[in-house]
Image (cartoon, rainbow, N blue to C red; front, side, top):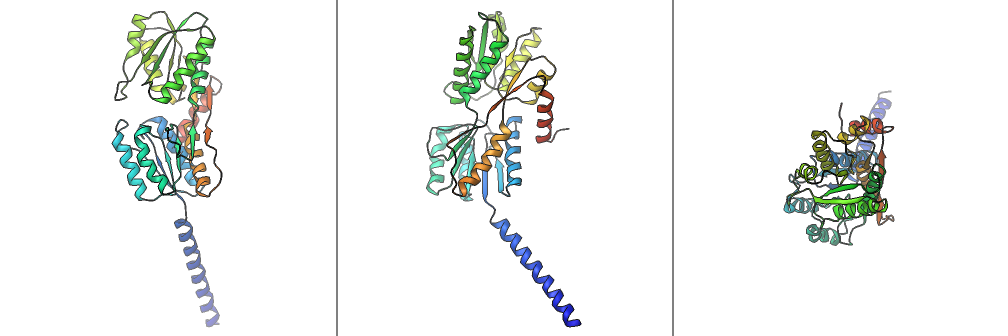
Length: 317
């Protein structure tokens, strides 16, 4: 009897050791995916991070999301890329702040056969596995078309943007211009609203003073859109403003019917799909060269759902 008990105990110990060994091996074999973003101190990038981290969990990925301390420093993001390269990850998901400046470092990833996937922002490189994000010309066109529905032919609009050498700003403005001109809206102001360090400039106050006949505004991101809305509210005016990101404060304006509608990118999907596609690349599967994460229109009918989603992924009460 004692011998049987001893054998049973030994069997249980052996099975436990095998299970522990299997779990350790499984953990060791989890693919390593590093996500390098532009920043982690804004709502937009926190939503991208949330999408990536959900994918890490769902697909059992050994993943990490990082970003430089400063959005404006070229060297900081490239320093991170070099640090990540030393870890020899299985794939890199990357949102370049200064795309052309990062290409020399990305070439080092290519030499090691590490897939590089761009998220949100692409670079003119050609060595990437794919780009996951918004088609910015389409986004700009949809924004211009939406603003056009709120105006009458012959009325005037203002466009607010960053440096037009940046392809994101340039493509969004190009799309918006085409859509507004198609419906007979005159673009009377085409104004850069960031300085060279990407700090926002209080341009809307001057626009309202020098162009009091402006009846609508398109801004290439929600930060600029919110600045414009607050300047307009301060003047006691009712001028529609269309941004592009669908962040909380803008959605609240729609919910409260201060704005008739807003556009929203899908940063959560960018992060989630990015990790999903990185796994496909690691496994040698075919990955599409461009993946459009889409654009949503936020209205009074779906604003509450959007707010609840943002609260959930950002862990807000």
